[in-house]
Image (cartoon, rainbow, N blue to C red; front, top):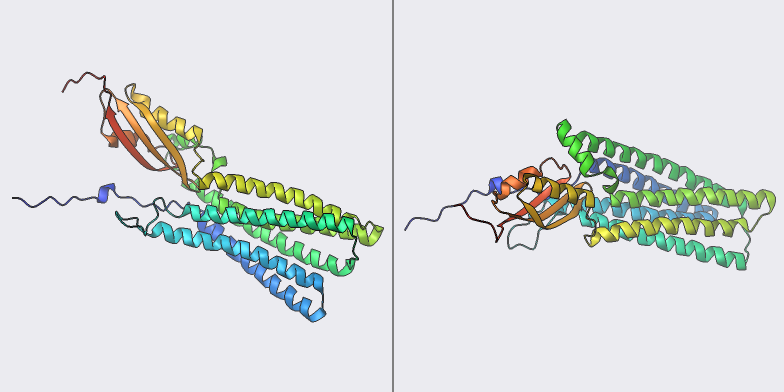
Amino acid sequence: MSLAHRHDLKAFEHPHAFADDGQARRERALVAVTSLTLATMVVELLVGWWTGSLALTADGWHMGTHALALGGAVLAYRLSKRASQRPASPGSAAGYAFGGWKIEVLAAYTSGLVLAGVAVWLAWEGIDTLRHPRPVQYAEAMAVAVLGLLVNVASVWLLSRGKDDGEDAVHAHAHHDAAHHHDHEDGHGHDHHHDHNFSAAYLHVLADAFTSVLAIAALAGGAWFGLTWLDPAVALLGAAVIGQWAFGVLRGTARALVDATEDPALAQRVRERIESDGDAQVADLHVWQVGTRAWCATLSVVADAPQPAAVYRQRLVPLAWLRHVTVEVHRCPGATRHD
């Protein structure tokens, strides 16, 4: 009896790390902003303790919550990268089926919950202050608000640079020749491929900058014109805007977490390319997101004269964002056999 043939699987194996080229830049930007936020937190807590300023102490802890959210985004990137590099070997539960992208999405979802909590807290404080006005130390509070605004403007600038660099890298990556580029643009617009994790962190910083601007306006109105009601009124306005941002983050990330992110345009392009020979028909098709700019597809093809699965896979190569494809091929039950 001859020894069993040992199959060479190298040609059929592929990685499941779907990070795009701009992720490293976005991660570096988040690390820089987290460090800046932590430094500001420490300064405010120390100065608040030294001067006895409750406003500075409160803002210091507020900075700490943002540092926690931003640090969580950085941690999610690193856990996702580690998970994606871990092989998903047959019979092993140690690997991740399609990489660690959902760790980032989960971090963004958590960040959205924190933003929603901030909105609820602002609304509660605003309503309570309107009902029970309290004295405000305008000069001290203004100094804290200006400091917070400067830190957040610097943070927005740092994150914007990381965001732009990432987009440039994606466009540079976005492919080989004019025909492929055309298919990429037609088959899949860029609007659906944002980084949930980075976007949620960016919204945290924008929300903080937004509330700082509103606070400065309200404090100026109270200090100079005696409009004490402006402070709680502005808090309610800020709560409404931040709540809307939080809802957007939660809606997008929740859909990604339950694989409800199929792109109809990409699915249609898959169907058109598979059925381009006039014989094959797609009987079953699933397209879902597995990375910031990476999608998977599983499809069942039925044909009178079926081709090898590799032939149908080759038809999908020009779809740049389609990174993992599984094809099942069947002969049509009613087909006339000529072999």
